Amino acid sequence: MKHFRRFALALFAAVAGGIVHAAGTAGVSAGEIVVGHISDLSGPIAMLGTPVRDGMLMRFDEANAAGGVHGRLLRLAVEDAGYDPKRGVLAARKLVQRDKAFAFIATMGTPVVMATMPVVLDAGRLHLFPFSPHQATYSPLHPLKFQNFAPYQDYMEAATRHMVERGDYRRACLLYQDDDYGLEVMRGVEAGLAKLGRPLVERTGYKRGATDLSSQIARLRAAECDLVVLATVVRETVAAMAEARRIGWKVDMLVTASGYSAQTHELGGATVEGLYGVSVLPHPYAEGANTQLAGWIARYRARFGAAPNVWSVMGYTLADMFVRTAEATGPGLTPDAFARTLERIEFTRDFFGSPAYRFSADDHLGNRHGRLAQIRDGRWELITDYLR
Image 1 (tube, helix red, strand yellow):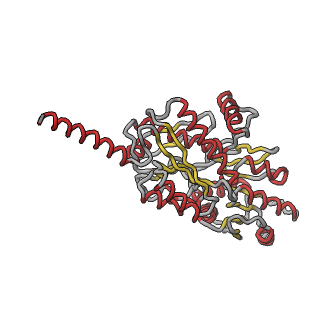
Image 2 (tube, rainbow, N blue to C red):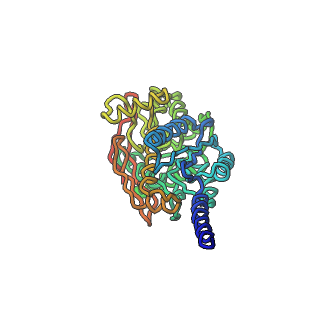
Image 3 (tube, rainbow, N blue to C red):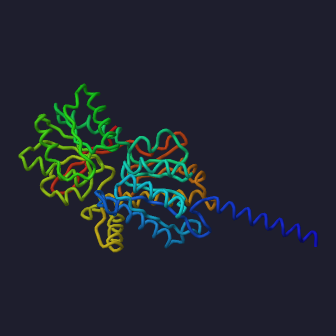
């Protein structure tokens, strides 16, 4: 009887220890992994947030149809912040406290990312691949934060320098969203011009969500700008070019990756013809697509009843990176184990044309380069290799 009691106590301790270990990893149970995603599904950049969410859902659905990750199904817990930092903080707290999200992926928009990232990291959750190429998303080095999008400062420094050298522009100017996003772009533009010994002739900002940019465009025209860099998103990019063309000003414009979207030429039509932009990866146009891409486009259309765009691809590839890293980590999934696995995986170029992403124990930024594209005949065309 005494030996049985000891055996029973030992068995209970082992089982209890397993339960404590499982319970200690938020968002991970015997049958499920919860992944948090804060997006904009109702605000000024909802046209970007919706395809990102759909791309992620598609990849997680594929993984679940194949049995999940080590027997655990993936659940994407989505919260709409409407591109509002205050709503973003509330969303982050809900995902941490109520949904017990194991990781946060692809939080949408720099203002929201800057407000929510401390909530996520303070809770000991992974902060992965936010849609905010801001230096703070990977530096200083933190064991749980990773970024795979080239930072605004780096790629806009290179893009501005390349554009000015290529076009011999003498009076470069900037239209920027008056927040962390715009300020990061401004630093990159100023750095690129400084390397060429040229000033930023004029700069003018607008408040997030603004729809009328007539006064800003008038100010830039009065400054006789010959190149206008746009720290805008899709809707504001179209508005800026439409206003310039309305008043007969045919100045060249270069937009960040935030405006590099099929929606830009779909909304702007002939107005945005000739616009330059920084490319994250090629757009998934059905015309001329390779066999694998064509099949993926068909599956996406069947799933969501709409054509995919570059944001759909980015959502899908980010979710794929999560799935592959979780699989490589093994059944003992914890934030630390996942992060250490991510530091040693290399994600090679895929049929989408994505860049290769690679992290290390000393560097949590997976890519530092962008490419230039231009809208020609109603679609984006890549015009350079990766800029350095």
